[in-house]
Image (cartoon, rainbow, N blue to C red; front, top):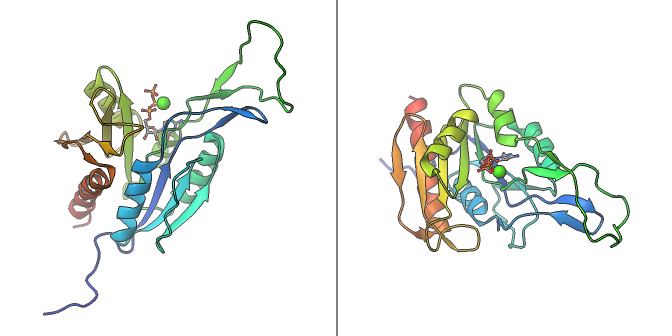
Length: 229
Ligand code: CTP
Ligand code: CA
């Protein structure tokens, strides 16, 4: 028996991936942002596309070369609000959502129309909480939909990661530990712990973000293969 067109593990599946940082405008020339490079999310989007998924990638401002895979469609956004709008539109038609973006938790409450001029010694900006994209879409998640989230923690890591899994209705949460050498924001390597909602835990070694993405996608594959029987 020979099959020239071997069915890939994600063929027929649609995936939503959020990636990169968000930028929240203070005025026309300044913003609140973070150090996310978008590498982890892009690597996951690519791996899913390679395995046959149709990927909707919602990408915050990154300085990386964008993937040109035929299975990846990119929507570029700047703010958390824009990222939410784009994700909410696509979510109901997706089998899988991967929330890899480092979404700003707060945004300036009243961004200035004109550039703010320097004046007083003390200056403060009032902030308001952004919508939690993963939590909000977790509320409307259907039983066939799979949600994957990330957690970046510096203390009480496992406990915090597990509480995010529950609170945001994730099937898997991937813990990035800031305490590990060579892991996190500015590195090309990473070391993660993958928590399944059924209690299974998988720890990776320190490896390239591409290899971590492969490990994560393998874990996602397992969820679909046990569900789809
Ligand atoms: N997330 C999101 N929208 C937000 C904030 C977070 O979709 N406004 C997602 C992230 O993409 C990630 C997960 O939620 O998959 C956890 O993000 P994290 O920043 O670790 O959690 P928070 O709930 O924001 O809690 P805190 O920053 O206080 O630890
Ligand atoms: Ca946060």
